[in-house]
Length: 488
Ligand code: ADP
Image (cartoon, rainbow, N blue to C red; front, side, top):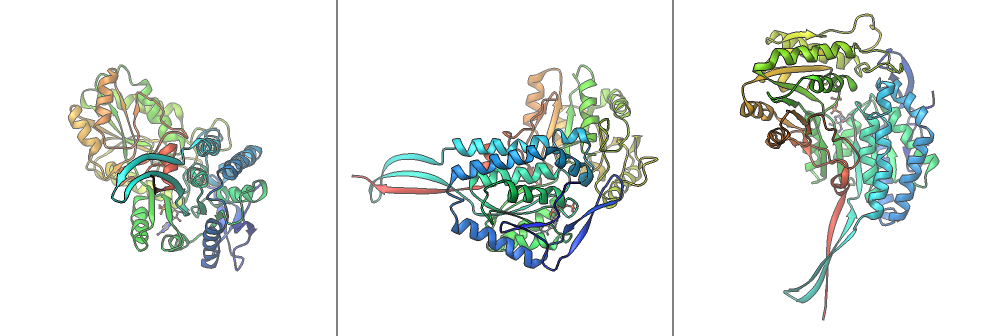
């Protein structure tokens, strides 16, 4: 299989200093299919110095034309290697082939030309006009500048998506980057490093990619005074630690963290077809390992049984997980045995606290080699149960009954998270009014899909700080400098 196991540091593809590597395990088979460079603190040091030097001493941060060209070159290189990258993503992430044709690879590749276009047309300078100031009249304006050196720390669930959602806008803005992927998914990031080194004019040091089995390597980046910004996607627990570490140097942070989003079904919904399809496919697509998934479904008490039955039927139609390389597979495995054990633990806790397993609730029979878990619906869940409060990160949907719209909104907002959500109802104006009351960063009305390169994504409350993607996601990587000069 085409892949790259070396780090990219200062323009060079190279082994980790000391030559250490660690195994990359296929989550669908449990087999080792490669070994990735295991970066040492010395490698982090060199990567950070290279990024700092490239920012301070090259024209990268001021040459928009070069950056636009390089983003388009990287996009072309990814397109030319799309088949290889698909196989890599299937093997490393357990992502079904069909999902690689969308959110696991093809869609995120489109972030590169989107940000190339945005940088090309961006209004870097904004006039503020003349004003009589303390020292006499002055002409004032602002210029946008790149933030500087970015540490991009990413998770394993949708690695292409998240790696590109950080590096595309950051590079478009003029930042230089040290990308540190999750230990579980090194190859998808190292492949980007290789394509950058071999197929683009991106200057040495502008992008550095370091894989490591040890999370302490990520921690080094968060306390380094040469890093101007940390862009992190991962768990809320790790986000808190990163924010704390960043406070030492008052380093800017972008955080995209956990979620426990609701799908709120109003009592006037005509039928449960769309609701059930969204619930079942939404839970299956990344085997529930997505922060923005709607993992709590709120059903009106008067129609609770009808709703639960419709979702269970749809989950049965979607079927169990299977071999992700098979075109017909909708759902793949969980990333690791540890993640599987975590999901099993949550379901056991749910049952102990009074939840009822409607379907699933167990590891997939006959697929013992990989980390497969059945599509699961837990009913009779109340919002105080652990399975309603904590992010499970597995294919488990919990169904909660509510009494009226106010009760539903209260349940939706009774969460430390506020990342995403959905409302379904026959009266669209009412659905929209309810959606506006939910404190969350993205909202789908009656199945509308908000996902796309131009749509800002991010969380309220403990789901994060800032927005990724869209214009807002570009401006995260910019500083504003104000100028004034005297006029006669
Ligand atoms: P998980 O719980 O699935 O490992 P995390 O949110 O902890 O998810 O990890 C997401 C990313 O953050 C990974 O790349 C991981 O190596 C990195 N990471 C974990 N802990 C830290 C830390 N204290 N500082 C910086 N990066 C970290």
